[in-house]
Length: 121
Image (tube, rainbow, N blue to C red; front, side, top):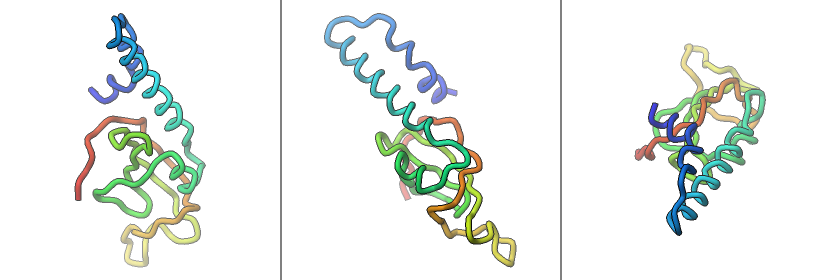
């Protein structure tokens, strides 16, 4: 909830700038807005390759068809993404989810961007 408020409520920070602090705050708000716009260009139907121009991988648990990605601009801005594997099955013959990732995999679902500290493996 806090992350949504922080990201979705960026305009609130513009309320009453005073002096240098207000100018600095305005620059930060504009930067966050640009990063969010860039992140929101990635949509279902696009490939993993396209996603990787805006995001990069993060540590933590993942499979070949589900992973958390972080913005190339700031590792605290994140999205969770689900893929449809291309050229291979989503699961192996034993029903296990594949760990293999492919650049041509198709984005099926991408979460709303959120804020979270980095995951350390």
